[in-house]
Each structure stands twice: as C-alpha cells, then as structure tokens.
Amino acid sequence: MVEVHLNAVTPFAIIIIAIVALLIFGPKKLPELGRAVGTTLREFKKGTKGLIDDEDEPKKPVIEHKDTTIQQAEVKEQNNEEKAK
Image (cartoon, rainbow, N blue to C red; front, side, top):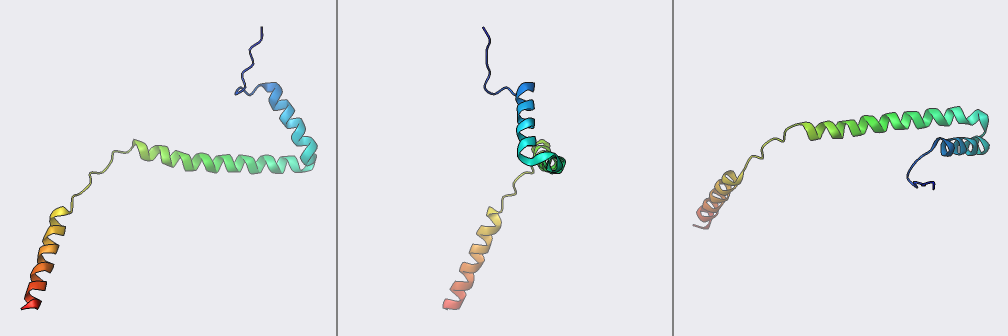
C-alpha cells in the first residue's frame, strides 16, 4: 500500500508546477519571475536572520525608575503646597 503525505513536495509535484508556470507565463517571462522570487527569498532570509540573532543575545536588565518617580512626585507636591501658601 502506498502512503500519500499531503505536506510532502515530491519531485513530480515540482515538475507539474514548473510546467504550469511555463504555460501561464511563457518562456520569456519565466527567468524574470525566477530572479524576482530568488531576490524576495534572499531578502526574507536576511530579515529573519536578524530576528533569530536577536533572540541569542542576552537580555538587558530592566532599570527600575520607581524611586525617581516617587521623588519627582514629592517635589511636585512640595511645590504645590508652597504655591498654596
């Protein structure tokens, strides 16, 4: 019994896709489309490579600014009290 995997791309499927593309776009336009697809894939790989490299870098610790915010609030409160006098 022959098993058929729906997710598998077989050489036969690639040949069928190439023939259909040749019939649709013609022999003159096909090299241009191939170059465009190649360029697009290359740019996509460059973009995703940067994302993968970012995950490998250690994360920088988050600096807590809570103390500074509290101090600023206290200074504003004192200024408001002085203005109210």
